[in-house]
Length: 147
Image 1 (cartoon, helix red, strand yellow):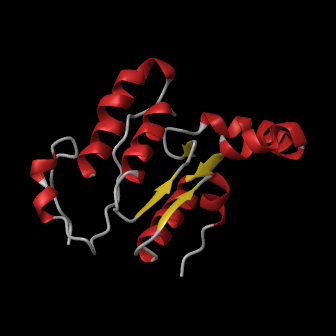
Image 2: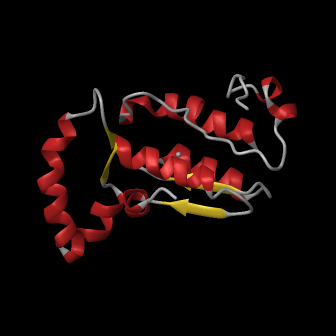
């Protein structure tokens, strides 16, 4: 059953969360950019803190790691989709970087994922929720398969 609340105000939803509930956190700063650092802290980090992602998400993950809340954290770098198509031009550059030993790890960590890949990864994370504490990065998001 969906729960409606303000992700920046725990008192609007906190009392309704039960240990067996699954939280799908789809809150974030639109069209992220370095000059939106304050927005990342206010929105991305703030909403995660009320439930218990570059620098603000790491801080949020640290907050969650300090709790006993089971969690799956998806770490896409950039999701390709409607309104986000220009990075498709970078796919050949990413492919070449993934083939170069010194660049491979960074290219995978900062890789692009498609909207269908992200939806599959979210669905898989929810379907396999439980007492898990895991982080799924770009290669895992790309490899996610529906049950």
